[in-house]
Image (tube, rainbow, N blue to C red; front, side, top):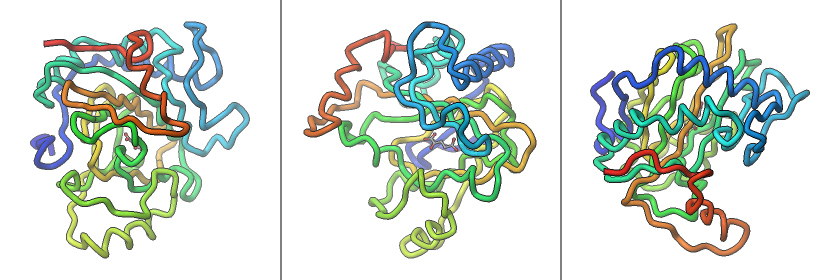
Length: 255
Ligand SMILES: O=C(O)CCC(=O)C(=O)O
């Protein structure tokens, strides 16, 4: 499982980067953020889950690294930056976005995250030089609904009708069957502190968490010196202006 290649397969796994202590501190920090305690005095960009919402649904909050020092320390870790530069063969790594995906024990399909590629949500970026690092902040077993990558799907043409927010993975599997019936899928089974990396074009999803404890992922969206901004009109037109601000989008490696 550990021998996947980011360019060929669309994803790979990093050698150990974080200690258990670093992972536990960040996880505690995320729990604070989830509960509305923003240690730094800064709010997250968006909350897709609020206190009082269904405790079995996925808790997704965007840019929690703004709100808590331990979470900031995790995503700006120099060792992480160096590893990300190595696997992407880049001279610069910038964290331009992040999200916590905290998945409590699921009820029915409440924990499903549908098949998608990250690039479909980012009209303001070209697809080159855009990646996601997924940091496990709990042990991720097959029962806990790990992220699953479709091998080589970073080379596929776009498939319409797939979406992170669509919990009907069975019907999405039928959509995938129409063009790629022989696909190979790999579960990202990780110990706490371990990291997977995938390209913005790699199709991935995750299923229900059947464990008692939550499955916790800190999702770090980063760009390299190969990334190019695309000027768009409408509501996203100024979204990427924030990459000029290192207190929001820190550069974590420069070669
Ligand atoms: O954590 C998950 O289950 C989904 C995460 C995801 O979509 C991503 O890392 O891009």
